Length: 77
Image 1 (cartoon, helix red, strand yellow):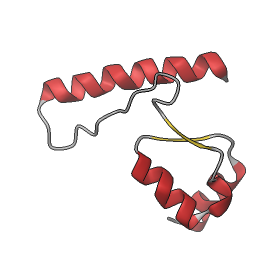
Image 2 (image 1 turned 30 degrees about the vertical axis):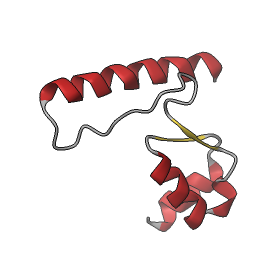
Image 3 (image 1 turned 180 degrees about the vertical axis):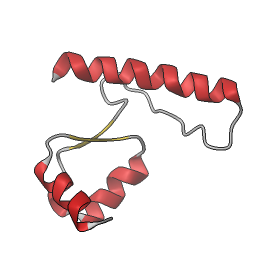
Image 4 (image 1 turned 90 degrees about the vertical axis):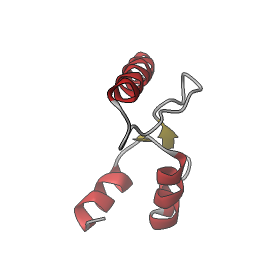
């Protein structure tokens, strides 16, 4: 990560990531991110699978999950 991105994570509250691996990486790189980093699907209690290298239906499914998760976040922010 660039210094600017690291500063943004330190400043932001909350930080929303797609995957648990991203949350762990942030915790390792920026210890103060622990406790304020959440999965996008946190409120829906669902993960969002990465559609990389998948077919179109998988991208559409992931998009639907993302839209639902963002909607759930917006209700709470």
